[in-house]
Image 1 (cartoon, one colour):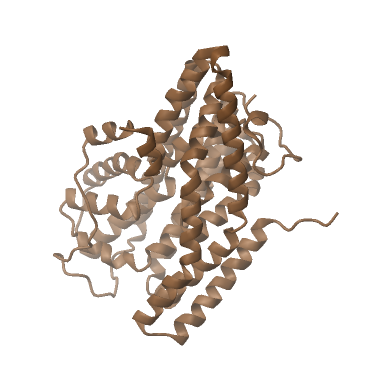
Image 2: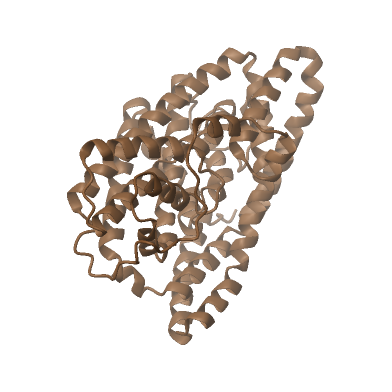
Length: 426
């Protein structure tokens, strides 16, 4: 039987080919408008792929999470797992933000920038609003589950799914027929996901070609210091996350990293954590995480455990203050980090969400929002790193919670891609 080439190989080849194609287009058509027009046409493939992912993500989360909770048998299990997951998420958030603050203050990436600074009254065009606890809490609960799914509000879908799954579990025998129907729905969504994932290399190629066509590779040299510092911070964060995973699940954490290489590359190349969700679920299946855990913890992680995004928020805010020569006391910086930890919890599903959160934070501390204009040119390259980091952080968090719950089995070497839910939830 002919051995099937892994999707990872195709994604890597697509990334390299996309960079070469984008560079050729940028050099051939140096005019900004022409390059932007070509890039917009190239990116059609990526846009379609991401829309396909958005098309399935809400129903995929709803069906897999509902079945997972229904198989738990009682609401106490869901509450216990949720508390353990939230404890990990809060600790990981504090580590991400603190590490970013320490490294930013040490490296001073915004000083002696050598670039003209935007006027302090310049606007970024980002819609920002003051963060209130009332808005955050009320946003957790959907006005309608249909509206939540239509808008891909994953956190709201998660809340509704918890209620729905718990009710099915409470019905016992009377709920088995509906549970079986939703189980079949989950299998249908996973089958559709498998078909969509075949388009991943094409989407990766288009994403890389588009961004390089628009910006060229020269912009990387201009912001090399900041980008290098930020990716160094991400490497340090990966090391800490892997070390934490090693403490709880031992050497198997390295096998987990090998299994999530496809969703990692997918998140990195498309700069979208959502694009990696289906493959991440599949990789955790193969690693031995019971579906009732992964289908619960992973969606929570997408709203509450954005390690890479939070580190970027820290780097960006302190970079801007350093660029404008604004001196912040340690107490002010800590207050800012705590605010970022809260506001970042609502950034899932919002386009350019990290920039919106950063802009809102800058306004709170009277720091020029115009400083974000310095980073917008390379935001796509930075978004690639933070999206991939989010995928790593959520995979390790899910595996650790599964270990705590006694729901981490031996690795499944013969599990086909996109395992049916009923076979994994028992």
